[in-house]
Length: 365
Image (cartoon, rainbow, N blue to C red):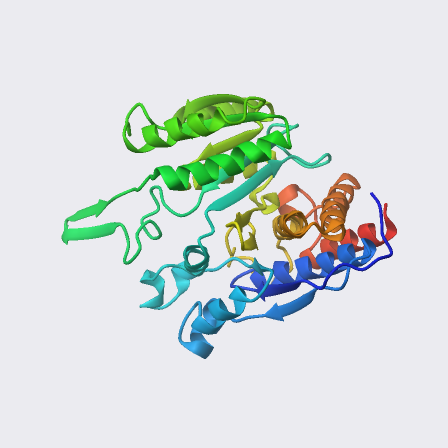
């Protein structure tokens, strides 16, 4: 790891604390980002806190105010905390939730979700180190696969209908993202589908992914049905590299993979288009432990590192790329040193763990 004395450009990042444990893990991530960027010799991040979630409903009459979306358009990226939309009062509870709103507004088609076991952690399958590339704008997520309204309807009180949408254009974009990612890793992509039953929809997804794969001859390709994939992950998650799949399958598999790697509390993700990116932990708002200093900040910290890595690659900024590596190393060293939150079998609180990661980054050990 190298440090340069020259300063990079100043990046402007949004802070959306969200609900539940969000106001604990998002500020924790901000502190770790600041420490890592400083250690890497980069210019300080310019942070912009914006309203979102339950507090935004109370103050602005919307869980995702138009002013927040407008402000995000002018930022380089942002950190999104979890939301507890199930607890929102109507009509907000029935609306597209905050993360879905932002993903749809900005066309964040790629949801990249790593699952990596830590040395000293409590992984179900030690050695797990895979990434799920989840298509993020269509598939069987009815709340974001139409231009207006949603893909759900009730023609009678006793009949509910949902439709899923798979397009060649949407599949090509996530397939390219998956194969480019695999090319930087262990050069293997696994396509996950259900083409034996959903022949036209996930069959199209599988076939288009295979077509894209032929443009990357150095990457090995195989495929599994979604039900079989869950079994393979439980038994041999350590043998997989990059999994590419549609929206709902990817959501389910990434939760499973996070637990296999040790805990959903260590499962990060970044949501991106070609021009925007958002750091968002894969887990929820955990309202049962909110405000008790019990939350695990790892997923949000590593999501923020993924955002820095994305920005570093897009803007050719070595300082941000270096800072991302420092964040990952700081978390790994802290866990390896025996400190862990309750979900990983330890006793550390969110604040204590965060302070230890900051110290590890600053000390370089």
